Image (cartoon, rainbow, N blue to C red; front, top):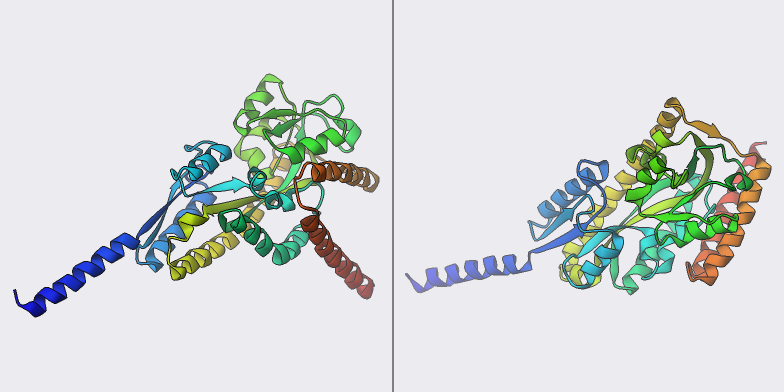
Length: 341
């Protein structure tokens, strides 16, 4: 072999070895089952990332809760068994409380309000998470949660005597119902259907799509048509693992996932609207609180928010920022309405 050929082969071998050494597979867990819209979009996003990075970056998903609940996933991330997870925003409260700032009770009343506030605050949530060691490569809406029950509920006093479910460790829901004078029953989400079957619980809050997916609607008769909270999810990667990617590959991951989550938000919104129509067509009765009853709910939520603030469920500064953006939006709506009239 000539010296020139040897040098060329050495360079090619070095380049190949360097390319292999730079390849990173990010292992990500999620509760979303295989075959769901969420997983289909995630897999498509992963394919796009692999293609655009020439396979330097791969995303491997573990769906259906095979890695355990959010708490288990966070523990496995700490020991390096996983690099990331798709979390309910409330699951990150012990790491960064303001991750669930959008999911405080009775804060939002429409999707338009959500869209306006998110344009101003999503970046702040990402920055807060990164300071705590997590890179949010996607923030997605789950939709508005509504109260489903076996007897009509239009005002807070209707909850008396009902057996209300809240997710384990969900301090927001706990505080909300306690402010209404109710002691809710905590269960893992996987146990809700059984709880409804056995009569352990008879009331639960969830999105319309969730109620159908988990078959809760087959065990309940009424839906209170007033949004309780807005549910959010966050796809977060351990910062140390993410920083192993080159800056250009980090940018590709962020861009592709941002586009993926934009599509998911639109799909989730459409699915939830269709699911509400499906619930109605399948015999669920929708109860409509009066303006007075809504104001009473809002008053109760303020009590819950004060208690949540004392418990450190959010930072006062972040909540004030949210309220400011909401006020700006609502003032603009009122001003535009006045001009039309």
